Length: 291
Length: 326
Image (cartoon, rainbow over all chains, first blue to last red; front, top):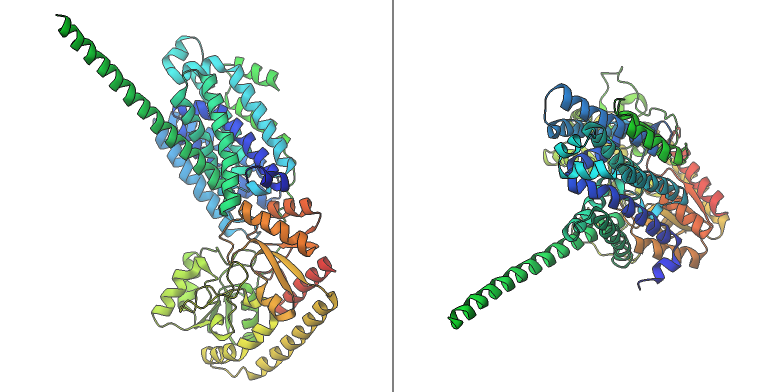
């Protein structure tokens, strides 16, 4: 019931391995996304890679290379528009986001070579994960962890306050872009497994759950990794037993876990304030009694 | 690699997109350079150019039926195919130009069984405004099968639950040919009986040829991408064991449970090959095939894919099936 599906089916074992690797990569990158409020950039990157993937497939090269170029154009474009034209980051991201998405739709819908439908790029092919995919996912994990370790202090300062980072002698622009690169690497590597649309869910939901419980960044990442991996396992089981799409099941599980965790922390908080109120009340009461 | 990133971190004055570039290139180099799912194939245009402006326009939704219409009308009409060869007719979204062509056509020929999902609204508006439309599905015995493989019941609506993949059986095409011929005669104002006789003969020969090829196989158990080979299997004595996406449309997705069930069936029936094609994930098919030690064969079932005509298209498909199962 809980184990046999994985014992019996190699495709499920590969899907689980791929999903857990995505979860680990997303736990590291996602924690910074959540702390620094970069969800919109993450979303934009996830969709900005679309024309790159489509073009790569038309020319018969690996989608991952196309996605890498797509995300580079996206990042360069965002920084160019927001610096040159004095538009807010949001506007620049939004502009490029819709532009790249539309370009992707146009390329896939009008090409004479069949590149597969858009929904497969958006939702991924978790049940078709190959060992080759696992290798690139491991590479991404190593790169993301390496960036996070090397730049852990500036990243931490950036997440708290940009001014703090620059007064400590770190270039805000450099490390901001490095952080974006880390997110881009995560998105580019994960789109094959969970798809460009759902990678955002894996980036945010487990990390947000981590942020509910933990104060330290490392603890947040560990919670996010556990939540993400567990969601992958539960999502695949749900897909197996209830005949539901795998990628969507996983992300929905992760969002559901966040909802449960958020409710739990709210209840705990309410109980605590109530207790402390009652405590105070009792205290004052007894004080009155003594008097 | 850590050294590279480390040095980049310390180069504060340099263009910081360099760091992005380095990391992404490292990642890209991890993946192999070529993708087996993509193919670069040149596709022959099926629509003739509109130099012949005087002729009535017959708009056909997809290339397979488009060729049958072309064979019937010859040069008496300008046949325009809406969904280009190579695109998924289940999902194709029309451009404004496509809609204009369809709206102004003397006759529109469509599948009629909710096949062209992206064209649904355009076709509906033609039906509603009393436009001239020929739906192939209304002139054949519609195959109605529910998920479990049991024969389903008609829900009252003639469009609900019907298998739209009617063109994959030449016998079904023969069934609707008289009705199509009269509709085309009316639209082009020409006598097409000679062409109809020739095409009927050709399709009858094709039908026999297909039957011969499949009969020589002995056992014909089929596993396809989505549930697309039903008419073909019913007509020529094959059995559809299952599909990666057990649905009449490619817009659905494969699930882990259905894949596991399919795996058991493939083992049980000892099916030697999985047929995939448009709308099915090649990766999923390849993975399943390698896990079971069977072949994964790409089959063109929804568009001509460069075949000169309908007969060639069907023969190519049948020969691929025979080769894989034989």
